[in-house]
Length: 77
Image (cartoon, rainbow, N blue to C red; front, top):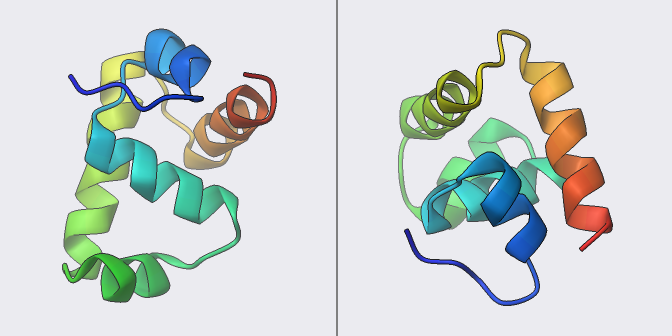
């Protein structure tokens, strides 16, 4: 796993890959999945699967709660 500087708390807490981290940051900055897909040159299904894999790995069932917890970790490094 690649850890990005300045994001150590979310990488340690959530065990996110670099691509998942980028996607989560974009979603936390109010980009839609479609906008994230366009920005990263992938399909919307790919963005959705990234979020689902990260949620499953961390034991979340609710996407809103997962993104909220990620947002908190991003804002408290």
